[in-house]
Amino acid sequence: MKIKRGKRELLQKPKRQMDKRQRNQTIAIVAISAVLIFLFFNIGKGVYESVQIYNANKAIGDQIEALYREKQELLTKKSQIDSPEVLEHETKKALGLLKPGEKVLVLKEQ
Image 1 (tube, rainbow, N blue to C red):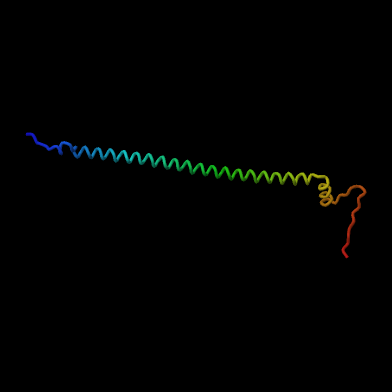
Image 2 (cartoon, rainbow, N blue to C red; image 1 turned 120 degrees about the horizontal axis):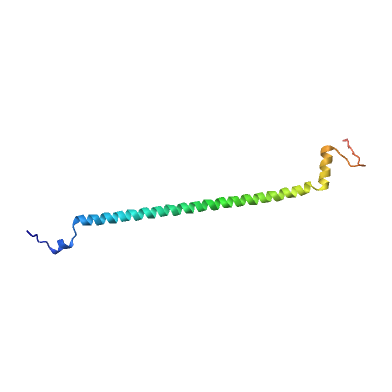
């Protein structure tokens, strides 16, 4: 026995096929969304790490500059200390040594 169908019924796909199509579209959308979210977080993580590295690099550069300035100050002090006048003064002050022919004058308070 043949069932007559109208044109409209023939053009419509069975409900089961539409459900598969919708399911496939939903799966595709979820998969694409998951990939995009994964890429977004990886790019964000990369940017965050780049900023952290930049900040660490800048801090190290600042430390290098500070150490260089300190080194220059210490070299200046060393050159001053190594001068014969300073060595003589410090020796006299610490050990009480005198050059031959030198006299010590002691001043009394009045």
